[in-house]
View 1: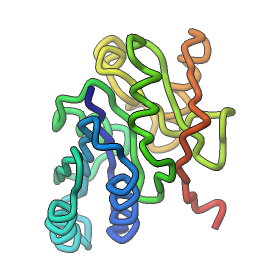
View 2: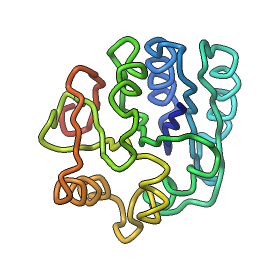
View 3: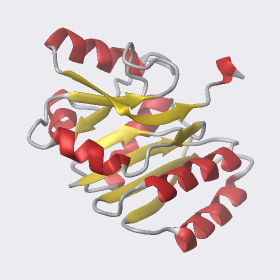
View 4: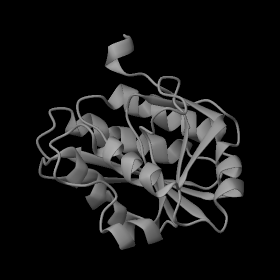
Length: 190
């Protein structure tokens, strides 16, 4: 199976690199992982991102593949949805340039859990919301095709994750994976 981590970034190449490093160091190597990065054409640090892409590609191990897509600036949900086309993954999750994966072989744990369950929403312990809220949903390509999007594009920025989590909660198809830790270094916690 294959997972794509859809990751918009703007003005934070250092954070993006830390995110990449955490993925690169913690994946098992048993599964294909695509890190699909989206940047804006008008990002003042666009050249730094391009140089960073070369650096990341030279450092990848195991079965990690890194791609970068540049486009006009748009709402965040639109960006996440547009990044799907750059991967042939079976599963998708959103990534952030303020996120760090901690648990070794987290991909192996994930794929052991999701086998045969394409219409469930999965998420890891992000160090903030734990099992109370899914800030980084993991959804199958079947889910995305059926619903028509990864994230709804009716919100300007916030609550796209809440929308998806609410749908899954009402359908009783949520699956929290507490043994996988990743940190969301959210601005609200400093």
